[in-house]
Image (tube, rainbow, N blue to C red; front, side, top):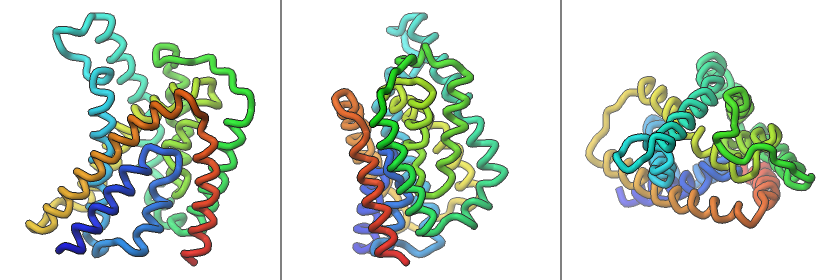
Amino acid sequence: MLTDLFNSIILGITEGLTEFLPVSSTGHLILINKWFYFEDSFTKMFDIVIQVGAILAVVFYFWKRLFPFGKFKTLAEKKDIWQLWRKTLVGVIPAIIIGATVGKIIEEKLFNSLVVSLALLIGGLILIYIEGRKHRASLISIKQLSYTTAFLIGLIQCIAMIPGTSRSAATIIGAMLLGTSRQLAVEFSFFLAIPTLIAASGYALLKHGISFSGNEILILAAGFITSFIVALAVVAGLMKFIAKHDLKIFGYYRIILAVIILLIIR
């Protein structure tokens, strides 16, 4: 039991640290699961629960910008919030359609250390290239983001179905290529994560069902809380980081991680 709780906390930390950074949570979990893991039947459900913890951290951090109700909000503020939600939902449409049609095939054929390593490596090189060139942002706020651009960002996000790509990396890179500022790209990546991960988690819950023992509930709770706390710190930290720095460091980190996975997991 104590071992499982320890594993739960380690995996919760890993999820919280990596879900919203452009470094691939899948790549990290492949490494971590070499030493910290659960029985196969419980692992998938645990992964869903810690992912939900990370999602709630984003909702908590951006609550004022996401919640359209309340007597202290002006009509203009409420209108902006509803517009944000509409654009976010438009952005998630490609992931729902593509995930439902080819998601299972991708999981069966591409979920291996070689594919993850190559995705990490290529994504890292692209991130370094994007940040190395002179970037002129024509879009700096959600208001300026058109529904077409939101849909295209969501379409690019689907590349992250390839394990190791990183959902946040695909979204951020795609958004910047489409003319957004770095800050807007990161923010929209956070917002787009909410319906995307909720849809993925909901589908997995329906697929695997819900039936836990008392010990399993305790393990799930530990992972959920850990993931939430760590993800909240990461979201806050990343928003401060991008105000003064570019994202090259994550590109270099991805390349190093790709090499480590290839060396450790054969």
